[in-house]
Amino acid sequence: MAGSMNPVREAIIDALDDATLALTATAGVHWVQAPQGTEPPYVIVMKVAGTREYTFEGPPILNELYIVKGVGFADDAEAMDERCQVLLDNVALAVDGRDLLLAPMPEVDVNYTDNSSGEVWQHVGTQYRIETEGAS
Image (cartoon, rainbow, N blue to C red; front, top):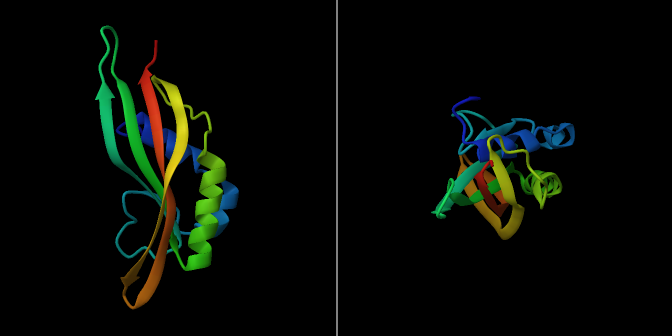
């Protein structure tokens, strides 16, 4: 996937490459959805919105919203969310080719259930705002 990824997406996924998180998210960290047939627990990262602010000179400022959530039984999903918060909340991400203007700022909690194949999975996470501009 490297090379084709949005650099903010890549920075988030890199920040979640953590041995402690991997103990709970045993099925890994996935972009948008886990591969078909993957059983929780796992973490999902997804971009939900983004805007561009153009200035008189230089590249636009990108203001993007990402959801990072744990999916699994309730205790696992909550543990994954708590660990993701430690790894992301206001952390200075290393974003290739862009300057970080606003580190991941938690804005909204995410919490809902999903019934799949007779199992009830909890989705617990956080929506983050991240702002970057082209590196100077």
